[in-house]
Length: 390
Image 1 (cartoon, one colour):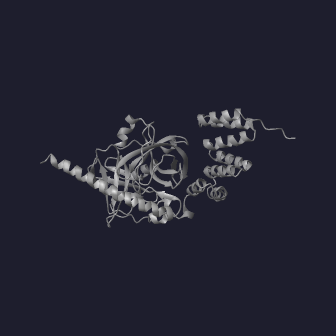
Image 2 (spheres, one colour):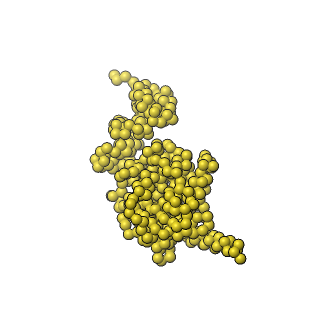
Image 3 (cartoon, helix red, strand yellow):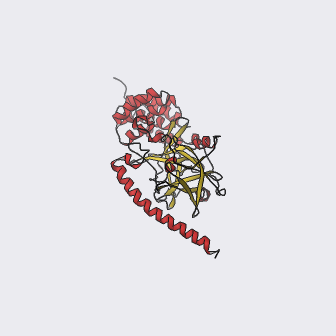
């Protein structure tokens, strides 16, 4: 009889999982239909625009052929499924990452309305007993009794990332399976005391709270939100914020509904971070509007190189090369390590036939990104020199 009991409990848990997955599929279909017409209908923390949080769990096929499976297998074992249930009985699913013994990080928007939270691990459910929330950062730490054996993942540093760095997104999808997607860092957006990571690591609705990892297996971010309907616009909050939340001295709170401020990405449109407003205009190719926004951005944050970098991209698209060059030059003067700005500046100089200037830029780029420098040098060799002035 004793040998049958564990099997019965496992079967019961699996049946509950399947039942929840079917219900979540129906809920997700209704949610997606609503948000296509009215993004505000998706959640009380709506951004009212083009961004959709990864609120539920969705399934996608892993595209991780380049992953070192021996390295990542123990990391995958440290990622759990999160189930949050409200007083009314509705629920949402997400992912969580082990960061300390019995402690897991997830996105607060997964658990914000929860009366109870459960961690699902190895076919069994483990109740969350206490939590620590920073809703503005959209970062919650869950404390679970009895899961000391889940090994915390190694943590890296966002400062080690560069545009083009290869990363892997790992999270649960549709509440049924863990999936991995490999892509590259597209941009690094300074925000308050951290850097939000934009990547091309596709994740669909529901991967919230999953991990963004460097290819050496170190956690660098938590999957958080995406720009709906656009490629390469997937955003993760930085691992640095996890460190500061773990270092807080205040006690963990009982599990319950979070009546705090909405996350930074869910503010009204005019209060969103500039990089989010700019990314939306860039994805929609509204270049004139992007130029106007960067005017306000540069005035509000005069030391932010990204404002000038995105201005240069918009002006290039509008075929204003002289102004674009000035914008890129301003960007690299503020941040000499901004390799992509050096590269695009070099391209414009090559287009103008300024080979010597392009060669100088290539030398500046070489220590920052040898691959981009090599590509720029190749393009420069095929360019025609500028014609002398009459």
